Image (cartoon, rainbow, N blue to C red; front, side, top):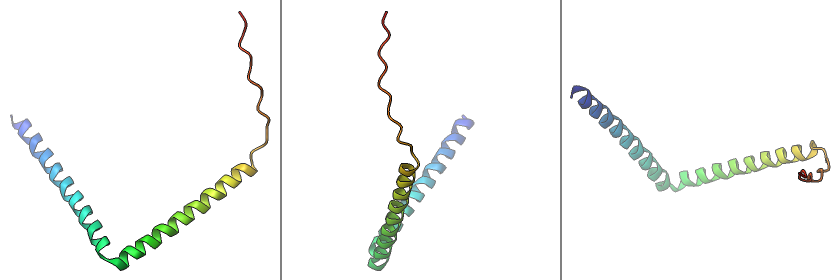
Length: 82
């Protein structure tokens, strides 16, 4: 019974920690959206990161295309006859 009691206490402690964490994150999100200036700054940062990601993926796609040989695809093989 002692072992079960200890396990329940441990789980309760973990649950309480998770609840506190989630509530803290939720409050921080609320606080950010309450500040119009901060929200505008966050939108600008997110937009800049999206642009950077798009440019990076465009460069990667171009590099793959430039460095891939145009090898003709062989015709499909015929199934073996029995």
